[in-house]
Image 1 (cartoon, rainbow, N blue to C red):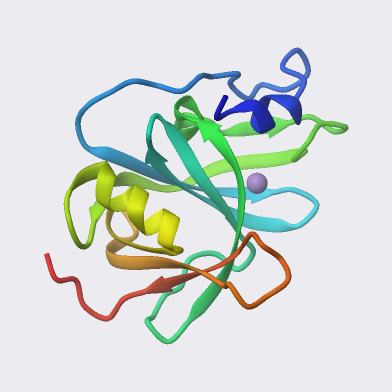
Image 2 (cartoon, rainbow, N blue to C red):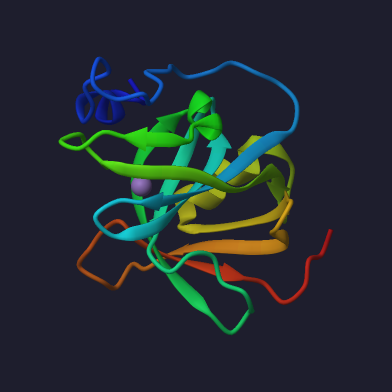
Length: 164
Ligand code: MN
């Protein structure tokens, strides 16, 4: 039940967010970055993989240069439909505040092909990919910080050059 945690955190009669389910689909993989003005402003970085959106909360937003490394806290998988979600999550609900779509587009692995390469990267804690967004274009990476106590801490980095 890949979306169990997502569903447990929310009451769908009280939030406009989609209940959603894992999607079966083909075609180019999608990503979205949502600007989420909750109790603390952050950017939710989501990559489609295996029918759900793998998700990280990035307090400072995506890096602008390869010199910046941005903390990205891995959070629960979100349903595929969530990539289109924007609006207001009412007071009293998980993540209460406003969500707007900051960027979206397709993405692909930097090395290897398809979802298998991404799945392996995720497992290794070293995910490399190319974003084809409206704002973000080029090679990025998510690297799991294995040395820190918080098990869900990753770094979002911009790579100097894309190979593909
Ligand atoms: Mn959020």
